[in-house]
Image (cartoon, rainbow, N blue to C red; front, side, top):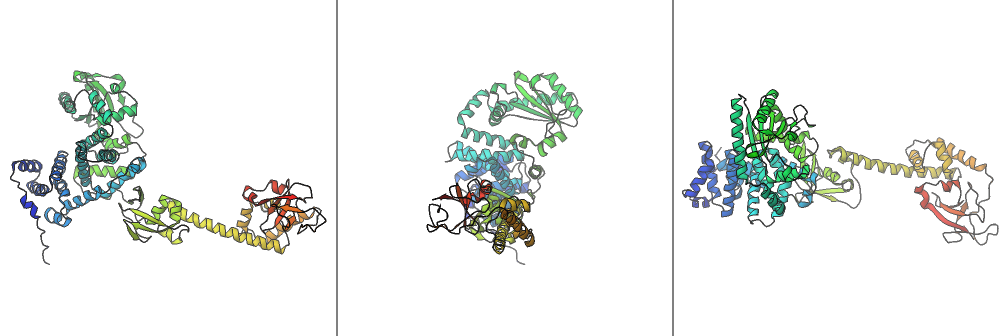
Length: 625
């Protein structure tokens, strides 16, 4: 089998002089710390990047430098440098491998999805968008590249190089910053949040920045000095511990002021340090040491080890007045507590964002962070679920194997009933088409109609199945009611019964409404003999009342009784009701029977007084003339 031809490099690459000092320093910096093979691959990717237009080159290099800062692997740096080069996937695979090509492809795919403001204003939909991006990426590294590119775009937007910075900032605040938080990449999270906050609320940002009284660099320096002093004292006490810390960023300060409804001056944890030890007794030893070294703030102490939070979170929290009297929050916990807080149901991101427990999402976040730490490739993080978009850019979550019918019923029951076809990514597809994550689905509907029984085998959700079965059940009920009415009318005609005494008939059949009688007759729940006996019994009870000869027609030629005027018209075919026997001069009302005849009742007739609301539309005006 002949070897596949090697795809040549673009000619423009030859024009990029890597011998220029600026280029040499940059790619040397990018390649340092990687194996010789990876460093050479990064250098070649850099050569592609510098061959693209100037702004794209600057962006690619800036993104790669941030990724190196957060310890991304070599293929991730290569992919970040190649995203804007315009190289085809085949060329990237040939020169850098399938792994790099796959990451470039996923970055380009993820960046095609932009969340509209109308969706961002709906918290549940914003969450669904975040899950959509997680499911599309299916690997932490493309997500890291997307987040870092978004960071660089925000930086450019603040410098005035982006037309719609407000829209960009809203999307970042609602989608990208929470994703960075879930990945545990705080280096990206805090700057994404701060840049978006500064763009959306510049006055508030400026006010808080002034109140901090010192620049971030000096606050970071303070924290590092504090950590160094704490580590030295822990070593003297023969306590082995990991010590982490960084100052809070402006947006987190703003959110805490809002959440706790406090003023800036009432915040004691603008600087925070975390100490991780091996066991619980050591936690309390560290606490005693910290309180011996610095003055504690009594009202800011919380023992979440002795009294865990409802979500299982455990840690010791204390605030001390550190060097120069600056308040510092110190959190002390064991490694298992830290693991639970980072990966379990007490994850910090879910505590901050709120929301209910979701095992699938928690498993996904844990897998993401493990992937980031161990270098494992992505897995099926949302096993059994897919995420598709409606034309309004709303995300719908469905089980794996879902079809457009499932989307239709998720949108609205009536949309589901009238679904007749679908477009997926602008292309007409059959209703049994199996959807994939990231596809846009448009439902085509008819003005009227209903579902098909075969749809029960095509839908994957209980909601859709229930609605389809309910539709058929209602239609069957309507058919049985019509059949029952027809059978009842036949029996009335055969027995020569012209008016039903509904109260007595319902009492005898132990039902509540005429509709129930029709339905029971249509379904065969009332046998013909049982119906005939009930009709004869109610007719016999009526026969005990002295009969007044019914006049089938009351016209001007009739001299026995006055003329009835119904609906303002004379000479209409009417009959007097046997139940109340109305006489001339009494207040009367007409009732349109199921045989389309008009029966005249006294206005105080019990059958009229207790007539159900659903049948009162059959009453017509009648007066003696």
